[in-house]
Length: 319
Image (cartoon, rainbow, N blue to C red; front, side, top):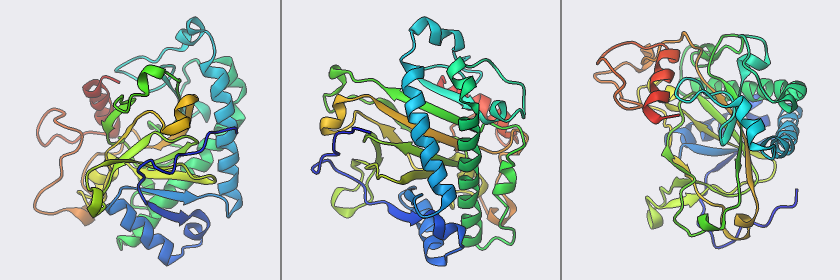
């Protein structure tokens, strides 16, 4: 890919770099780094270059990057045929296009998608399967580091074959000179809904707030690194652990420097709990109080399934 360099003078966050191969091997040092990252910055880099499954995920992400260009460059009237049902579903076309894992793998009945996406199903299946495995490796690593008796405490709530909101998301941020003013926000500050987010991007734009003493609270870039995914947790992990783990706020702004002169694409996998999983604090984390996530969603103390909670979040946020 012909990508302008990330500028040296752009403020960046020094988040942890962790080896996927080492996590698969159960390395204790790298595993501890995951827990530290998920209780501090909330984000970390995952080096995918050192083992076959990681490299396959990298290769699939690169092919999906190329596929995105054709999908988003299609005429508007063609894209509108696959419009997302706003406020009711995540899947379909909008400025970010989302494809359900359940539709790709025949877990639930599928909506219609563009022909290019249909013919690319083997690629999409490969990516979603490998990304889901990656997310579960993170979940099991965290369970072990939190000294839970069952390392599948979190992963069990994200069974690949269970209907859920898991999905592949393809995004494009088109070049707009009016946006390159240093103040435009492409995606406002937010936390993710689910369990684990696996992101591949090639240009800057993602920002989180610094914890460094010299610039605490400042929004700084997460610089894309070749061969690495960017990992963060979602609100479900916060709820399950009663706030022990963190879903960090983040936002997207125009890419810095010369990178702002080209279109920005991202390929993301969102792992979420199964639709029928209960959004509740898990027994190992029960205490005197419980954390509030996702704003006021209705009856105080009501137990929501993931599906009910997701629908309410979509309405609340206008997705």
